[in-house]
Length: 385
Image 1 (tube, one colour):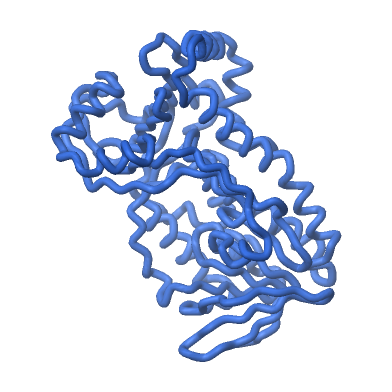
Image 2: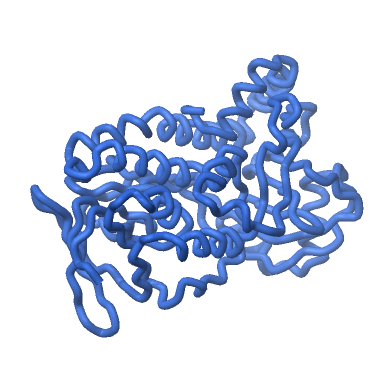
């Protein structure tokens, strides 16, 4: 295995693989390092919400064509609990087949891996990176592999594994929303196929995403409330959801295994350093409201690949390349962060007078087609779309 590369990608999740695929077949030496021992060693239970824009990028990468068990989202209904506030976004109004899709994380990961097998990227599984540093010329990566320490150098190192590797040197900005997200799969007796629901409540947003025979639930609550809910039996939990959501999809019948995770906004103060770039969750971790985080990560990977190719071969990792990438992502990244953070702060409270104002805003949006199209396009393609 050649120990010097043009680009070394740390993290073999979907965002890291997407970058590797975008760089393939361009006469570049690219390495991907993944701590997991096996490429198929992932049992992540999540279902991912992909935007239509992410579908287009995955098609270009050759990963979309092999995906199965995909549920399309043709309509998004946005409501506010205990009010008449309502906005409906439709794919037909935007001349696209779907606004988004819901599919298993494991299926997407496997499809990307399949495409990766047909590329010229060097993949090293079981490589646990312990240190990343940079000089004026290159980045140096130290990693453990099969009980021994190895060194790899690259013109550019890309951190795509969550960013913990650099957090000690470059602490991220963290906003704790005081919330946890509960995820589970549920079924109802009157599902509305192809319709996703985003419902705002005082305790936080609730989403139902159409998926297979029912819906993927994302429910937000305080940390204490979430732990209490996890201990409820299924009947109690379903009764709570019924009162929380109403009867738009009929009665809630079954609920699968529930799990939870804390909700925070984590933002790297900068997404590039000498010969080093952060993408995906290493650059920013968003609240799940409106499903923007993963889709932003895919756009990170695509636009970084364009910046690398524009400066190849001698300018890879240079200050000019890093500056071009920062500029390309500045508007979309900042707009996405402000959008999700603003939704949480605006809708997740019970402040006096805010309820009627929020309800009026949703109704007004529903009656202004250009505004609805603007919001929908931002959700599908980001601010650069």
